[in-house]
Length: 279
Image (cartoon, rainbow, N blue to C red):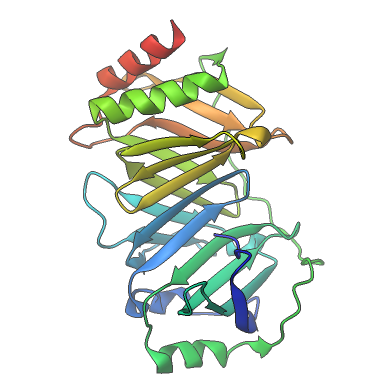
């Protein structure tokens, strides 16, 4: 959801680093398009978002109107955000879109919330009043990130895959109408989305893979995809198999596997799709 070449910034207000209650008012603004990830791998979901309880100093949003078979949940650590902006954009068709946009210390956009339908004017102006005017788009610097401790889980095994495997698996899931679950993002913001692929398209000129589902769009830049592995993790229910996508810096871009608890989140169907693609 980066700013397109025909979009014009009408107004930009930089948000303070500590803005209590900002996300408490998100649901009142109406349905928004939430985007998570960077230019390498990004998912966008249209929904009405609301805040839910999360560990101290962390943020969790869920799609309030999301179908039960297609949950969407954002978990983020605002301490890893360097800059935030409230933007008013003029779309190519002349409409005014409003957007919250957050960057990490490298200047990468890690999270966006965009409203393409009118939002309550008083609520938006109240939000802008908390910030400071300015249209400068300098890369953020000087932000002290706080690492989050975690326990790594060693996979039972890894198997390298070809990029064509990903195309084939996604198309097989579309044909079988399998519900999948994708995780995109990093420690600053990670979005977990359940979806059923309805369209899988590859733009040969840009080498960009686009997967569309109900109110969901997943875009992947294949030129920046350097690792695709089938990974097996042991669980109480047996071996859990997922695809892991890695970027040029060794970072984890995304995980893909069967949706948990969904009507069509069939692990047998998922394993069959993997078997057909890998053999």
